[in-house]
Figure 1 (cartoon, one colour):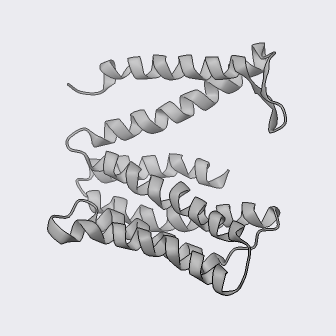
Figure 2 (tube, rainbow, N blue to C red):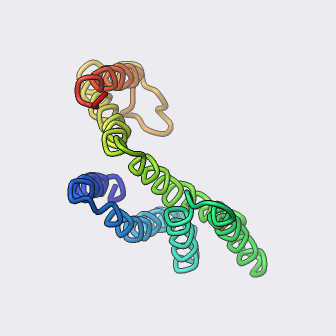
Figure 3 (cartoon, rainbow, N blue to C red):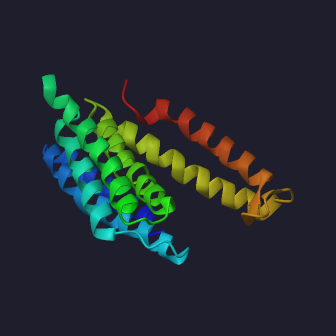
Length: 197
């Protein structure tokens, strides 16, 4: 998936931003990644004959992502801005599709894209923003995902016998799940050697 492959680009730019002492550069990543990720969700929905209002969903997701990054850790009343934008991003699609008497599934697709794309992106940004080792924590977080995928694929391909969910994906096996889980444990155990203090 395009969204997953962009993780490598995001991680590289975050590391560069941290090394350059310019963490604001990371903010510039949130917008394009949110847009591309939301477009991918909308494209997947279209393949299931669910035609969402792409511009509306992209705009709302982008508004939430930016609000969460700029105001998510702000003092005082500004902290509630992301919650207000999140509420708007949930209720506007609901009203939009209800007023046109369209299926509730379209609203669910919009909500899924909201929590799958900008919500997770701003969470990753908050991990990155933790001083002084946020960059290492983000590498640990993303690395855990990569290690699980790679280990599950390798172990499942070599020794996989028992299918996990054949009706969903015939290639995933219980052996792959075990391999991926053990891989993540080993990767996290290695953190003591490369995360300072």
